[in-house]
Image (cartoon, rainbow, N blue to C red; front, top):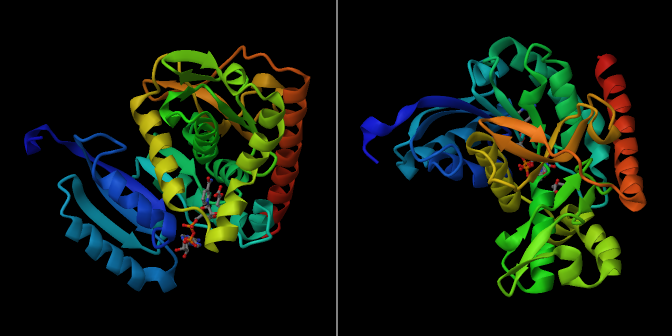
Length: 338
Ligand SMILES: NC(=O)C1=CN([C@@H]2O[C@H](COP(=O)(O)OP(=O)(O)OC[C@H]3O[C@@H](n4cnc5c(N)ncnc54)[C@H](O)[C@@H]3O)[C@@H](O)[C@H]2O)C=CC1
Ligand SMILES: O=C(O)CCC(=O)C(=O)O
């Protein structure tokens, strides 16, 4: 592409920029995979003060990639510098859990970071900023961030459940020995936690050239309702147990999928999963950050409406909602006391 066709740069902040997810993520953002091959970028890289030397090394590496879409890199430990005039904010920085912990065990430490960064986002970012929260507990951190950035539209706050969505697709594809891109319209409801509900009741898969309902193709309802759900719910913990580190490459890929679809739109008649601020759809408490099936057109995210919920799925959704309400209350308590 000739340089005259390149669009003016957008500013993208990545928090936790010296961490393992950011290390897998930055190259995909800089080479145009996410925001388009004609979209130049200026990266704002935020981390804590002890990581500044490490961040300098990362800046050198970004320079050495010699990618034409990169028009600037701003490494910083200042929230003001990091959030100043940003168009996109990727909140990756937070403490990750260790083996044996649930993600909500990180709540008291991590929500304080999101209170401080929400306040800075409110003050310094563009009002049109698009926000993705990755750091755990992702839904509740996103709730706190939005709470402290009241002048930014509610539709601009999302959290990452695309990794769970991708995991669910991969499990179905592996079971049926087909390519994951033929698995469509599955969804993740609720919290990015072990209460999430990976739901394939409306999903289809192409087997031998024919698009078939997933239940019909798998022919084992018991496997779907038990083993499949449990594998997806606990996949993050399984990766930690094996790697002694949490998922990073797959998380970075999921962040790119989420932001690319938000920026460029979803395919017609297909949906993806995103944590968004609930508008009360499917009787979920208004204001909770809840993962829903969504479609995106012209940068606008819409929750897919009219899906039928049977008794089992209602129970699953109620369980994950209950956990999110408890997390929200604990987070509000933890952030109001300082
Ligand atoms: N929602 C999801 O699907 C997923 C979420 N995660 C979460 O993403 C987060 C990051 O994971 P990793 O990159 O593996 O962790 P990491 O420990 O490698 O990196 C985290 C980085 O955040 C930085 N940081 C800590 N406090 C900060 C602050 N106040 N401001 C700016 N930076 C700060 C740390 O210094 C570190 O460089 C974790 O909370 C992890 O649990 C990870 C995978 C998937
Ligand atoms: O499981 C965790 O706590 C960290 C990574 C993560 O959220 C995941 O792999 O889904």
